[in-house]
Image (cartoon, rainbow, N blue to C red; front, side, top):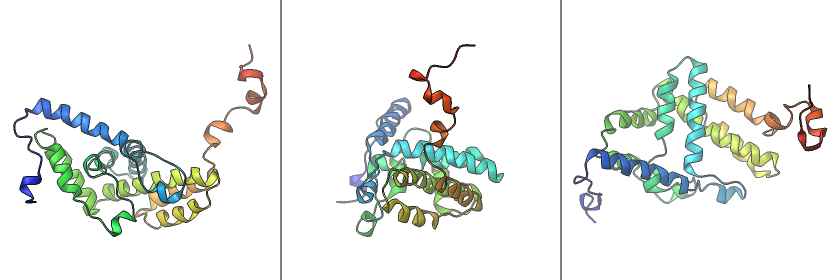
Length: 210
């Protein structure tokens, strides 16, 4: 099929309608699974869930590294948006299939008026020449590491090998430092061990009266 003929034509839709289209398209990420968990054997998430925490992590990393947290977060927000059109390709899929992420994102943004703001973020992330881009890429891996740590804590021994592989993909010292902390922290401590022990011993966890 000719490449031009395979493109979706949105030229007849006004900008506001295209923004509405874009909102619905972004919503597809809630229904787009991250496919690597098929090979891990446990765990599951969709691309929207992954993108949300990746954006938070990118902000945190950039803030700690003295970089622009909002630019890093912006790159992370949009880094997998193309998967609403292409679906998620895991590392096994990529041995046999290719996808054009830039084309998919360009088509998604066509007519929205957002391309001038978003496409430079995509290109900066792919080039990985700026600190913000490298931090955003690390955030992508750290979100995966956090999920893998949960699976490891719950008994999936294969997750340890995956964590080691993801650690090797980190590009910044800030990212490596946070990733090591995540890999050595029980994923349930933040809620289970934080309250006073007596909180769990009281019936219905009812706080005492003054």
